Image (cartoon, rainbow, N blue to C red):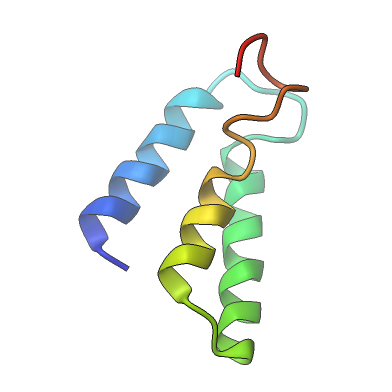
Length: 68
C-alpha cells in the first residue's frame, strides 16, 4: 500500500476515535486491519483495497456518529 495513504488513513481514524470508549476505537481498527491483512494474504486478494476497507470500516457507522 502507498505509505502516504496508509499513514494519512491511520492518522484520520486516530483523530476520529480519540474519545471513543465503545470498543470501536483506533486499536479496534488496528486489530481488524491485522486480521484482514492476514486473510487477504492467504486468499491472494487486493491488499490495498482490503486494508483501506479494514482501516475505515467504522468511520461511517451510524451507531457511533450522529451524522454519516
